[in-house]
Length: 121
Image (cartoon, rainbow, N blue to C red; front, side):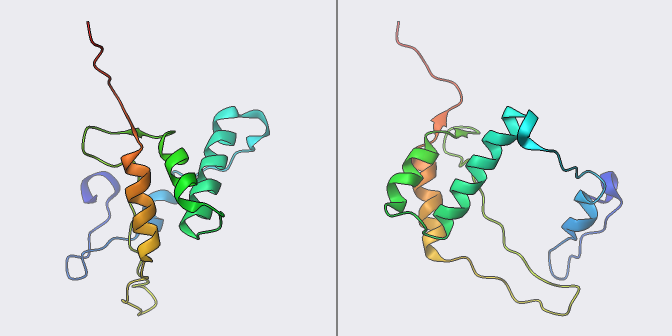
């Protein structure tokens, strides 16, 4: 991070300021004219609702969302959860992620498509 962005990693707390990284690279675009942004919006909304258990059959929705993702490589998962901390305001406590969120990631990962399929001859 220091080489690319000039940002030092806080080795004591093993963290960095994500805001400094994305501040210059972030842009907001209207999804009206972009099919790709519309698709990303729908996926993000579905994931958010799944993480909050806002569907009647959350497990089935997680399976269906998982089938839309491509696993980076065999055995890897397409979604990684991160922990957030508020170091700058003196609060070093973790914001906990509910077990249901981890369950969602397991379901979605088990339904990911592989990037390359081997075809039988």
